[in-house]
Structures are given as structure tokens and as C-alpha cells.
Image 1 (spheres, rainbow, N blue to C red):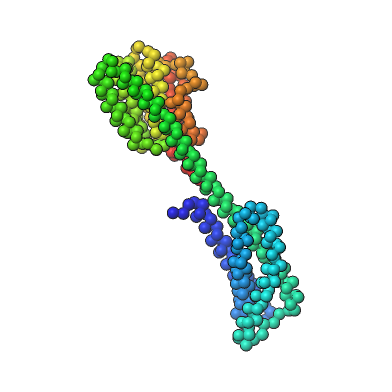
Image 2: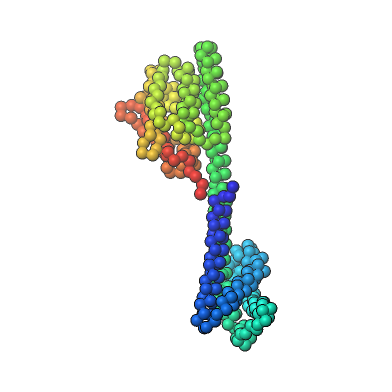
Length: 363
């Protein structure tokens, strides 16, 4: 499958070829009209004159191709044009000799004589006309090749950026997995001293959670429904640790289930709430997890009824929230946001805003 740049380059070159064909068709039409106005009736002659010129011009292009396509020389336009200019006298002599030799030979084959002005005048007239034509051609050729090189370099830069973003996302995803596993194992360790049955259930849930996360290994995005499934597993682990100290409500918009979100983008937010709120309180904490669609964006929020930004300042946020910020910046640039805000009375609301268009596409 051709890349976008290759398709564009092919389209440009086709346009140039069509333009050259139309140019020579125009030259033939003008020559025929001039011939007719001068009283000529053998219309094959002006067609033959211009066709022979076009044929030899193409031959010269072919002979000049190594020079025209010299990438190293073309990197310095002044030297490229200068080299072509140095060869121009030889090009003019070659053109006149070959074109007029063809014309004389064809006329002779038909038992006729090709007449023209004196040779000095022929060389001067044809050289001026040819130099003007080749000057236009060289300029067009250079512009087209410069444009196609720009398209190629732009595509390479986009591919490099995409690979860099992929590597960065992979690094960020690998960064959060050990952090999550460490906290989950701490939860299970604490349960083993108080409730072995709950610890066994938590281990089973952790294995399911790890299996699901491994299935998403290498992916930068997943559906919201899969993300919520992972988040429910984590929530059950934490609820097993903080029995009777936390309740979680799920207010999820079913229309948003298929929306794409960064892998494990909600778990660090919920973990942040447990770390800064639930762990520090002996009384119950109510947490509400919401999703909704709003004006081309997916809005995800985790809200508690007892937290305070004083205990979790955004200037010193942990690895989890910092990780999310970096990942959404890579995926969505400035189109997505992560915001922590205090609620009236008590509580903290963490909101993740993601564009429905999904991750940024490379040009």
C-alpha cells in the first residue's frame, strides 16, 4: 500500500507529465496555425517539426537525468543550476544537429528537400528558444523535486514522531504497572493477618486483573468498558482492605462505553483517593465514579466526600497522576485535561476530559 507522501508525489509527477504533453500539443497547434496562415497545405509538416523537437528534447532529458537527479548537487541549488548552465551550449548544439538531421533525413525519404534559413541563424534562433525553454523546465523540475523531497521528509518525520510517541507511551505504561502491583500486594498482605478468606479472594481478583492488563500490553488506548472492568477489579481489592470504610457508586453513561481512553487512566485517580482520603480516615468515605458525554468530549470523574487539596497538593502529585498527565499530553496534546478541584463543604473531584476524536493522528 502506498503511503500518503508516495501517493502525493505520484500525483504531482503525473500532473507534470500531463502538463508537458499539453504543452507540446499547444506547440503543435500553434505551429499548424502559423503554417496555415502562411499558405501551407501539407499539415503533416508542422506536426513533424514539433514532434521531432519534442522527441530530441526527451532524449536530452534522458541523457541529463543523472545530473538532474543528483541529490547531493541539488542540495545546493546554485551549484545545480550552474552545472546545468555550463552544459547548455553543448545541449543547444546537440539539439540543433540531431533535430535538423532527422528532418533532412525524413524529407529526403519522401523525395523532398527540407529548407531553412542559414545555419548561423538556425543556431542562434534555436539556442535562444531552447535556453528559454530549458530554463523554465529546470525551474519547474527543481520545484517539483524539492516539493516531493519535502513530502518524503515530512512523512519520515511523522513516522519518527509516531514511533517516539509509541515508545514514550510504552515507557509510561510500564512505569505505572509496578506501582499498581506494589499497592495491590500491600493490600493483600494486610488482609492475610486479618481475613485469610478475603486475602484469597483478593489474590484471585488480582490475578484476573493482571490477566486483563496483560491482554492490553503494548496498547496505548482501550474502550471505556474495558477500563471500567479493570477499575472495578481494583476497587474490589481496595474495598476488601478497607471493609466498612468506603462505599463506591458508579454513575456511568452507557452511550460512552465504546469511547477510547488511555489504558489504566482511572485506576491511578481512584488510587490517589484511597491514599489521600480513605487511608487517613476511620469513618466511612463515599466515592462516586462518573462518565458522561459532553460537547464532543468524554468526561470521567472520581469524586469523594471528605478529601482536601491541602492533603494532596497538585504541585507535588504522585507518580500516578503525573503519569496520566504525560500520557494524555502524548495522545491528545492540549485537547485533553486532568483537573483536581475542591467541592463545597468537603471532598475533592478529579476530572479527566478526553476528546471523542481519540488519539492524535500523524499527518
